[in-house]
Image (tube, rainbow, N blue to C red; front, side):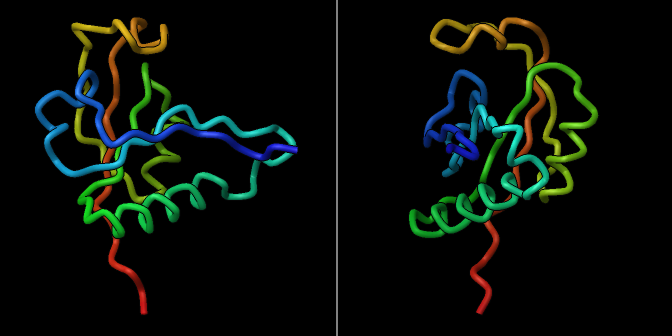
Length: 116
């Protein structure tokens, strides 16, 4: 049984614009099987992203969400992500359809150093 899936990329220019030049990993489309909710899987993904990013000398882990979703925004902030603003995408060709539906809320966290 699959507990959770997500997508990553090292390039997200359509969403992040000029900020895309910062060395970052971008996490998208986290989907959790309802049978596995409440098991801190987003935290596990963020920990994985930190490890992955350290290995590639990346500076940020970044995420976004389309539309104002206070519950999800709060969840991201609890995971150490800071809100860095919103954007309305001018070009959405090549992106999933939900990116056409409103403002995109952007979040990032600096890659945390490895604890000894």
